[in-house]
Length: 138
Image 1 (cartoon, rainbow, N blue to C red):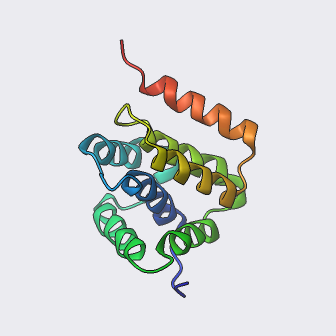
Image 2 (tube, rainbow, N blue to C red):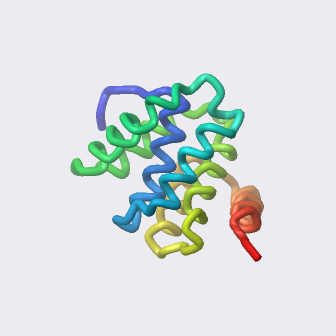
Image 3 (cartoon, one colour):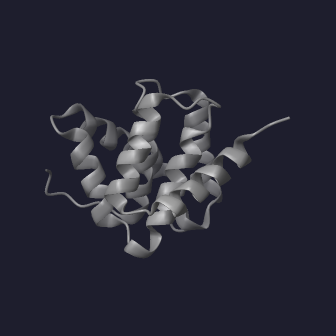
C-alpha cells in the first residue's frame, strides 16, 4: 500500500470514483452527480472544487496498480473519521444510483466499502433505500 495519506474530502471523492469506475464505465450522469454532491453537501464544505478532477485522476491511477482497489479503500478508511463513515457510504450510494442502473460490480464495490468502513447492515440498508428514493423520477 502507498505511504501517502489523503484528506477526508479526497477520501470521499475516492469512494465516489470507486463506485463509478467499478463497471468500467464512468457515466456522464455519475460524473455529474459527483460534481453536484461536492457542490451541495455540507460534508464537502472547505473542499476546493478545482481539486475534484485531480483527486479523481489520482484515484484512477491507484486503481490501475496491483492491489489498487484495496489500497484506495484503505486510504479512504484511514482518512474518514469513524463518526462519518455513514456519510461516506451515503456519498458512494448516491453515485451508484445516479444512472438509474445498479450493476453487479457497483453492488460488490458498495459491499466492500460497507464492510471496510464498518457500516452496519441496518444503517447501510437505510442509506441505500434513501439514495434509491432520491434517485426516482416520475
